[in-house]
Image 1 (cartoon, rainbow, N blue to C red):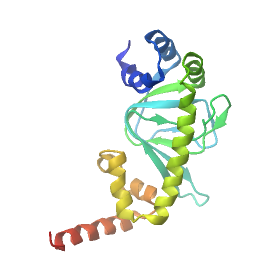
Image 2 (image 1 turned 45 degrees about the horizontal axis):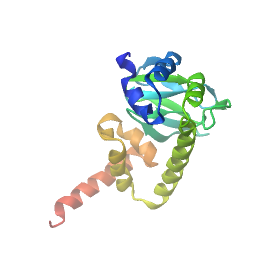
Image 3 (image 1 turned 60 degrees about the vertical axis):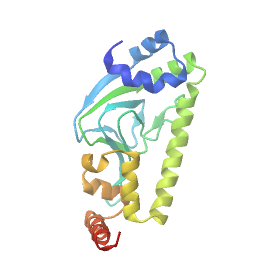
Length: 202
């Protein structure tokens, strides 16, 4: 097997594919390279594929009616990328968000045909679509609740737990967009927290 697909094979191993079926599956898939700054999915466009991240980090974002960029999430290595459009891959869907590469990315393109093959050859493959739907719903609900209830600094620090090294990989203005604050506000919050930590007795 091509080493390009090693991480992908480990990712879908729980779905019970034989080596023979996996080798057929990857014939549908295509390794792809995207440069930093490239938009690989656009809101409103038909979404005929999802992607597996072998290397790199991407963000989901939308443009408001005023032209403001609003970041809704990130994806890193060993995660799947969708535009929130494919919840039932038997039907044609349109992406709800834009997906932009924040680094040079190595991805595996998984077209609808590959997903249908998975369903036909694994009794558990239908869980992929259900998992994506449930994960995205939980992600968006948590995002909304956290904005209303959690301090900015806590949300900032929680990102590191979910996406290790994200603060070294993603510019502060993009993280601020995700946190729904300005870069200046975020910087001031971090500075105040640092000063308090220095003055608080241990």
